[in-house]
Image 1 (tube, rainbow, N blue to C red):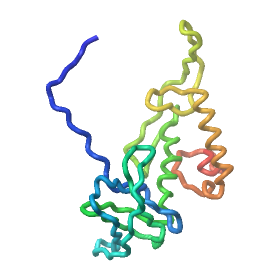
Image 2: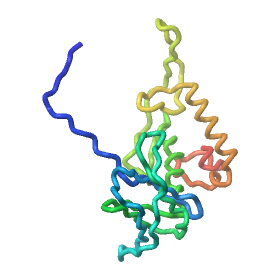
Image 3: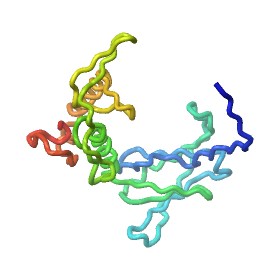
Length: 219
């Protein structure tokens, strides 16, 4: 082995943003809580919330929301304060300002629609043995299909064998396909279908041609 040493100075990692909230947005009528890092916001005791006017024509102040009590986060050890925005329910684009810090967020009934669609479509992107395309969402993610038609089955350390296999999902980036992982994945997808069929049955996933009698989710 070898030891590699550098004379360059270490660069400190940038601090986490002082205002932390879900990147997807919030649903109207649901709980909306933002976390503020107390150490980064100085003496501030409240947040100002603006609603952005559609079309980029300015913004209007809609609320001044006081911070909750300072508490130590059991996960990070930081002293944090909560900002409860649950009273905001009108759909739209908002900005929350604390001192010199500002972060934008959305309130929308469809806030989770795209993340759900892309989570389900990701299984298409991992398919083995068939052409893959994530258009129209990400048309640059496409290929004509993997060419490997045999699967290596490992037994003891000194032996292995192969068998035909052209379906399934790649596991991460190593192109491996594992029975346990596939079984858990298939079971989870079918259980999700049982629990949330009304939502999933009408999803349009832009899948390759297949059994048109099945909902896209089950294809």
